[in-house]
Amino acid sequence: MSIMGDVIPSTAADLRRAGLVRALRAVHEAGGEISRAELARTLDCTRATAAALVTDLADIGLLTERPSLPTGRRGRPTPLVTPVPDGPVVAVAEVGVDGVRVATSGIGGRLSAIHSIPLPDHAVEAVAAVVRGALDRRLSDLGARCRGVGIGVFGLVDHTSRTIVEAPNLGWTDVDLLGMLGLPEHLPVRMGNVANLIALADSVRGIGHGRSTVLHIHAGVGVGGALVVDGRPMPGRSGLAGEYGHLPFGTTAELCRCGARGCWETEVDQLALARAAGVAADAATAAAAVRRIIKGARAGDAAAVAATRQVGVALGRGIGAVVNVHDPDLVVLAGHAAQLHTLLPDVVERAAAAAALRAHRRRMPPIASTPIGGDAALIGAAEQLFVELLSDPWSLATR
Ligand SMILES: [Zn+2]
Image 1: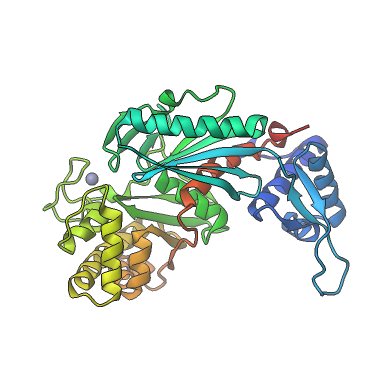
Image 2: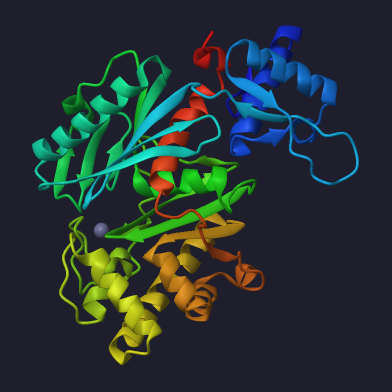
């Protein structure tokens, strides 16, 4: 019997198991360090129960305790609960236009050993060779500690076929990247769209944490996002949900990469902002062009100011329309959507309110930028594995 995927404990063993899963998740969500007292508060249990759960998780080689530093506050010092050093980890990779980045992440979600490799070109075979080489080295370094591989790509990932349906920045269509990597069969491998992974990272580690319904919009080359309900991004039937950029909010003047006219992203993505500012850019150069335009707008350059306002209005109008569909309690922006909102909060928010239903306009959900920076996709790539791995602590056991 289950509700929303959580097993309802019915026996003492089930209760114990559910307690261990919750304790491990609490340590993970706290960033890998939580006092035993805080753990007991988070789990709504006694300190003795929290201590017993930590002991069980220590017995299978996942957690350890160390004395807390004196805080100067009154009361007994409480031990700090942390993952064991050299405990289980996942290897993650982000495939971008500029290069491939790999990192390692353990319980607590901190990234370590981040390594960047530039890409010689965007040919599928060349990129696959770079990713394969980087992951081979990482897996060999980690040995038995590695319990999964997470990959983020700037493109649409079909979860059923496990292929990249489209990656406009890389110029790819229907690419079986995983098939070309030859990863070990015993390791779980998860590949996701960067926009979805950023949403997942924010829902675990950012401002979306603990919210019920969060609309994430990520704008780069193309516009994507995710609706996150109770911390879980809604993937749709095959992982292709959240393609907000292809809602027909634009005029029909611009042909979209998807083949339709009038898609929202043709008015708000990085290429649209470059076009509005009269700057030549393609998928590979758009990010740098947008950085210059936003810097120019800050400095008062008239063309940059006009372009950012125009795109800011288009961004806001679309957000207002999607708010009408999802009724979120928070809108989280990433990519240059976040930069535009930081630059012109009133422009974006007024346009959003103008497009929203009267019921929302009276009480618009806050619009904010994710506080998670350039590592969000790597963090999300790890979280998509931890969502599964932490629900079975014994699968992670090191002894
Ligand atoms: Zn489109």
